[in-house]
Image (cartoon, rainbow, N blue to C red; front, side):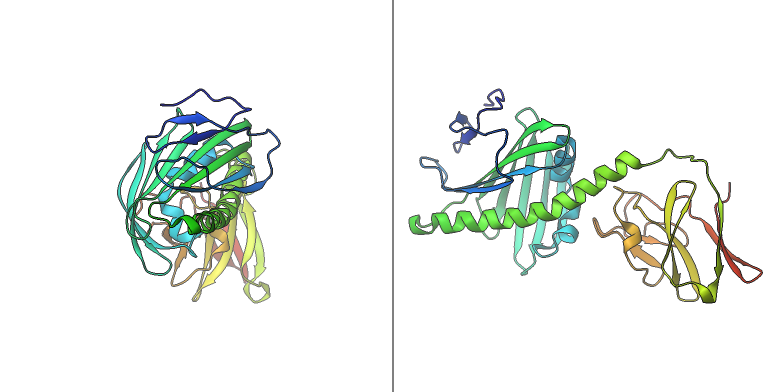
Length: 298
């Protein structure tokens, strides 16, 4: 069952997912807080992590459903992930931890209750559940309450396990917040498809240039870099979710987005990692009278 949200109240949850109002969640809650286990949970409740996030609820839901970013943004926790099923409801996937342990994870999103539940279906800590509730207080402020339920924990280890989970989630959210904030910033400033401005830029002689060179043409950013004997114009942003593609090095004619690992051929624009997107509107680079010229053809 799902109770109506009251800003001055928080929730505790039993094993069946029934919500029980139990504590005050202040509007000015601390940026970070780790709470002790709550007594009386059917599945052992080992602790709670609360945090204020400078993002919108939309970005937070998007992040929760985004299984693809885990091995890239959280490379210190995940080595790989293979989705088994996904949709607006959430996702289920096979994952390998950074230490090589195999897990089956499931995340289910309940928008009506503004929560998502992550379960470990197999692997280390099998049967554990992580319940995250989101309390939006403004266009770019969401307070989250994350409860950790872990079976078969010895009574004298409960608080230690809870603090370990809270430490893990503090690190995961540190990494996720940077991505969510930057994505929102890019969405806010992203120009329309056709932006007036120069479509041709003279950079100078090749010998005088120190690559990479960052430029802007018709409102879009590009990074000019060398790939072997050829020069490539790499879009600053990934076409998938506006990740910082231009920060990645070009290797063997391909560039990899640091957020989701999408790889692109920098000359053809094709996605070579199998996803259905591509680099479009790639500028042409040529030499005219000894000068490097970058231009966008209409």
